[in-house]
Length: 263
Ligand SMILES: NC(=O)c1ccc[n+]([C@@H]2O[C@H](COP(=O)([O-])OP(=O)(O)OC[C@H]3O[C@@H](n4cnc5c(N)ncnc54)[C@H](OP(=O)(O)O)[C@@H]3O)[C@@H](O)[C@H]2O)c1
Image (tube, rainbow, N blue to C red):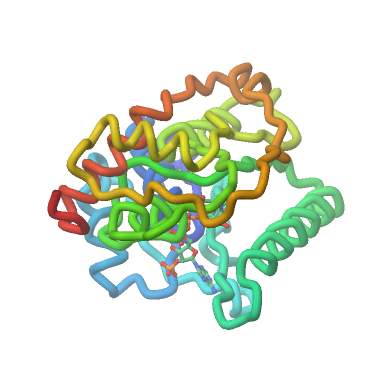
């Protein structure tokens, strides 16, 4: 690739050190992009080391400070980029019902993004994953894989709930495919499988018979799934969904490799 072409392939990944974003950065580097990754503290090795170790990082990864709570923080970084993968998201934990506020914040953020895109004639596509699991590149546990880690680490009961699982590699791939396909439009649900927690734990137990997983449901109410989903639109984009068993296995293997569990 010539220097001129390389210049044309500059993209930004906000919150670049995060769980999903790190995989997006990895795929983009593999595909020859120059990646400007933002994080609140680019001097924190916990945020940067795993990114700097990626193939192509030495030549084409640049790290920048970016904080969503600081007006104008991203202006100079996104300037000159042909695309922005916006994954950064402040997390509210000191409220009465964090899950509810999180969902509300995501709905409002997406609504604002669509309004702003329309106003500013930005070509926007959104990727809406379920609970994202799969191997971690970063050294810390994010909220969605923590769900699995808590089960492995001695939870006594499991919730009477269905989970909409998505593999982190599929979610990252969906981001890149949506960016590269000019006909991609609108919202893409990236959910590989909807499964009751009980059945997901059964798969895990079969894979790892020595794990101590909860075998009691937190209540005995009859269960009715409230989720309907379709893989169709994401598959048409080119997402080849990873089987849930592989995602669960690779999550556990990643926990082992990073020393979060010892079994
Ligand atoms: N994981 C899931 O199951 C899931 C499902 C649906 C949607 N999502 C959405 O996907 C995105 C990525 O999720 P993830 O699981 O990869 O989360 P994550 O690992 O926690 O990454 C989120 C990133 O947001 C950044 N961030 C937090 N506050 C910020 C602020 N004030 N300014 C700038 N950046 C800030 C953090 O970056 P630094 O600490 O490095 O600054 C962090 O790396 C989020 O928008 C999340 O809501 C995730």
